[in-house]
Image 1: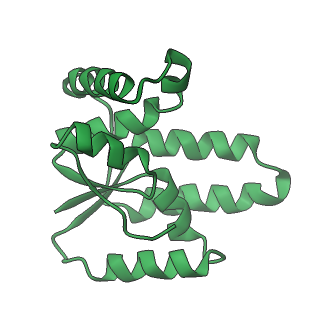
Image 2: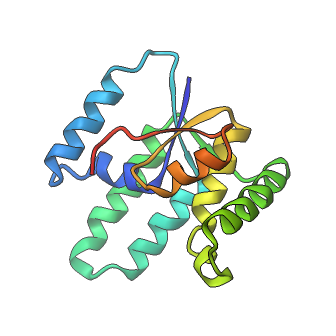
Length: 151
């Protein structure tokens, strides 16, 4: 099985200061089979780089180490492609209508919806603690989403 990690899970994966969540996530990873694949989207790397350039100096090295570790530890980095675009469009329109969100409110969910679309196209299970994915999976049942930690 393929598991696509959202940026919140990547951050927890490498942050042992968040002991309870960090340990729970690593326990879950240790239960996976050898043929299972851990993946991230290129979008997660974009988000991490943005975090790096906006972080105070004392946090920069930690974020850079997270980026380097993610590049080495994940089995695949998934790019965006044209076949994902129609799913993104439909999913975003459905979410906007169902939640009655404005265009401005919808903008903050663009990357989340892109990740959900990518998970569908790659037949991956999306791993995150973001509640937006519960909303999306209710509207778009093809999205397989799991919360591996409790917030």
